Image 1 (tube, rainbow, N blue to C red):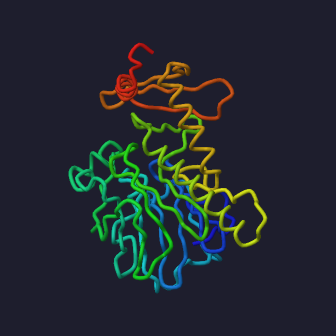
Image 2: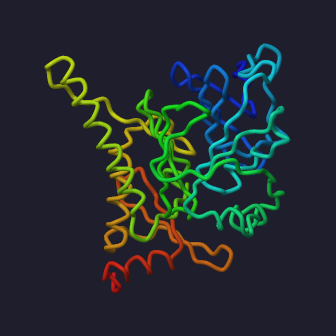
Image 3: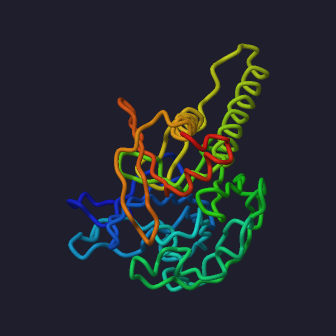
Length: 305
């Protein structure tokens, strides 16, 4: 449904391009995840499904809202960036009209999704029921989505934040979608020990920018500044500069491992000590288990930092 102008509705929606709707949820778990819905003639491609339930105090949009799928004629494809609760609670088949959704997840670590999902999804720690669903397709790295014809969407497995993390690139939009949090202020992101997934996304964005520049130059004969690849995260940011934003966060992570960024806060959760790092003038705050940082420093030969 599209936003009808109600004050603080549980769901707000707006078009971010001609075929993609951004849905912001004010969820019952006090999370505000972003869901992206790409509209095809016979399909709605949903990027993560959020928490699926509004907080009791938030009004539901109604009356003059415009449905995206009247009256449920199109099939749903739900692609999951990773299996944490704030990305999967809306994925239960009962959430959709028949036929059931075509559910796509990363093929990198099926055991993470299929074994002890209440723990891996964090549902049991949030005291919410773990959704039940049937996975339709395990995506391979660099595989193109098809349903049944190509959707011009390419998937990238990026294990690190979780073993099942993956991202996808919508070719016609020049837009990359990544379900993790960008570490704005108190939004913790557990960065991986080696930063491999970040390097992969930076390289992919740079590669796509180069291809765009080459294509335009070949057609016009005039060199030009390539169109930037945009990135939509799971929270807050839906159209950032993919290459620069990811490089900034990666570079900050390296400085953290080298001991150049101070710890500004710490707390205990589920038997682990979490630290938060921030540096003066930076808009980012990176959070991670202290153990993960120590392991990363050992791997980089920085044990004393």
